[in-house]
Image (cartoon, rainbow, N blue to C red):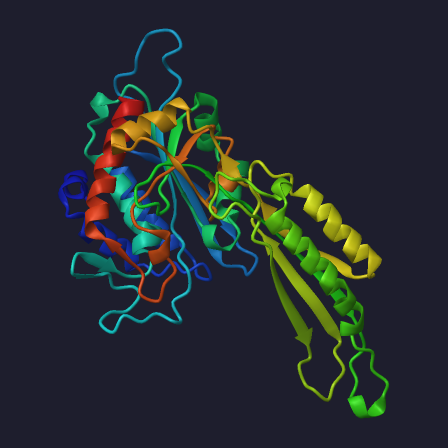
Length: 392
């Protein structure tokens, strides 16, 4: 697609093209990434590909793109800085998709909304940023503009991790102290912090046998005594100030427990009993205190500890200059926080980050995912102004 066509196309048309590419996280994202790369290259960006195979052997790729300043400032020290936009191309599964009038990979307009998997999270946002960059003449730039477009954000952020470890342009962005917008859905509210995640499984191993033989060992017998202690710990996280960060709503770790048995047959003793624990970490809470208490429960009851990984919380000061600048652009007075996560968990070495994107998180991951076309137009305008503020 030619640069002028990207600049002038109705934003809905661009979104429809990206939505048409099936990039559910269990599938390869190479096709949609190639389309994004071709658009960026058409408007003057050079692209760096970071390819990898996911644990299932599926080919994936993230890209980092850069458009250099055509008219850089000559004053000493003015070469640092620039603008960037960060997004992901993968989308959540579509098995439960249902609108009654469209499939998941055909974006359909209806009553001011655009329906389709990824319209809200977050192909719509990505299209807005690309069109915003297309509207800026490179000769107006005094500093570079970057795009970071990752794979696998929905299933562990491996694409962002690959960028962090391998991308030369990413290292350049950090060195230049570039300002960046992660375009996840916030209804265009400026977000300065989000929660992280921590997961662990406590598992008991028994011996499976038909109950008539009396030879089995029920794994629940070791797990059940630990459950009241876990419940007490959960109550502490909800009631004690040390486990709370009042800048979030809710301000708690929202510790969740899921109990699982294998096998489930009533006439077979349980061979595996486990409780899966998942909570959302916060910048002002030392969650390692909670982890230490969980470790003690695990040891006391001789359970297995299976680490499911951690994604860091992220925050910047709401008074940071780049936050205040984006507030001014959007016409808001104060920034906010969200309780979900973004690639900022992995990419927070880029110091000057904010999260701000079209659509609501309540519309993402739904069986009828949609985004307001009005929000798309607003995002395109905001991103263009931000690029001009930080790169022109």
